Amino acid sequence: MTVSYRQPGVVLTDRHFTVPLDHDAPTGETIELYAREVVASDKAHQELPWLLYLQGGPGFGANRFVGKGAWLGRALKEFRVLLLDQRGTGHSTPANRQTLPLRGGPAAQADYLTRFRADSIVRDCEAIRREVTGGAPWTVLGQSFGGFCTVSYLSLAPEGLTAAVITGGLPSLHAHADDVYRAAYPRIERKVAAHYARYPQDVERARRIADHLHTGEVVLPNGYRLTAEAFQSLGILLGGSEGSHRLHYLLEDAFVRTPQGPALSDAFREEAQGLLSYASHPLYALVHEAIYGQDTRPTDWSAERVRAEFPQFDVAKALAGDGPLLFTGESIHPWMFDSDPALRPLRETADLLAARTDWTPLYDSARLAANEVPVAAAVYHDDMYVDTAHSLATARAIRGLRTWVTDEFEHDGVRAGGPRVLDRLLALTRDEA
Image 1: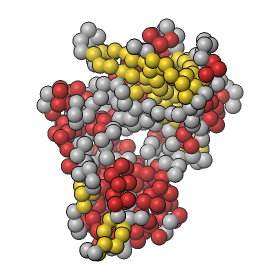
Image 2 (image 1 turned 180 degrees about the vertical axis):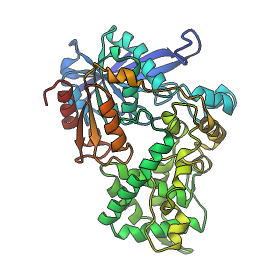
Image 3 (image 1 turned 90 degrees about the vertical axis):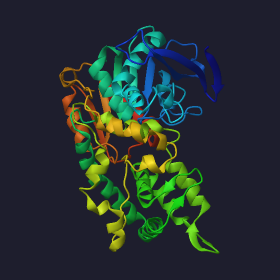
Image 4 (image 1 turned 90 degrees about the horizontal axis):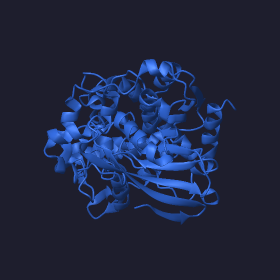
């Protein structure tokens, strides 16, 4: 059933699709996909080209815009937009602690989740494109992990694309997860140093909170065990345009006086819970390292192993000295599956995914080298989430790709910069800039 409704300046239509769980077995089990079609109210009855939006993640449904927010207003000037909830996210057949037991035990769950990477997402897009556009190619906008999916799209089905726009999402074509995190930890350290330079009062605040957590157990209202390592992981905020400020405001409200002495405030606990819980996006934790798996080497909890090569991130060592506590960034660790009640039932499943040795390639270097699709990519100069050097190497490997390298924005530039970012990149795909 197709349902249309209105918001200010736009007409929205709910779209539902049925696709194979395994595209190599098209007559086998199926899953459902959801996408929201958006068109400007004054263009609702016009024939327009399509733009497909692929959200960052993995594990997040598409943005829930109100009206023409962020980049959407620019897109609606010339496109009919499809906001896809990638498989397992949003309104698409969900994959979480409640639904995955329907698959069976951890081994069956892990096997199921191997089909939730970029290659399957691209094949979903191709399956629904024929229904949405009548077979005509469309433009794709890929943000972050959505950009990874876009590079897979260029590898697997470039005939489906009129043009491709990538924001903060050019992956390394060959790097193992270990390579990704060896490049990541120094970037994270730079972001933490920049935060403390901006807010020097946060050095002592962060140490005080970490020491409080290191010496006693704190359980958040939803049952999340807030350890010092979990507190460190709030550094994921530092990769966004407003993240340093958000972290600062969180830290300044951390403690209150109680009859029993200083304690973490309810306000701090509530906000930290919202930032740390994976209840709304468990796939992010489950398949995050799997998005880098392309050969017979297991990912084997890469971020955790590689962190040991950077002892400055060790909480106990930081607290034993007088230096600042370093936050961590976009990394998934085994302890998260012990701390977070949304992930606890999935620990064994996550271990099995980390141990897999049968990953298949996500990118086709030869096909990318012969690419004929107009492609433009925003590369953020010191992106905390995606390594700039890796992105530029990939840009050189994709024939005809044009880059816009900027330090004006952080990783969320397509949101913060809105219409201007999309306008610049679309112009690059058309040789107008």
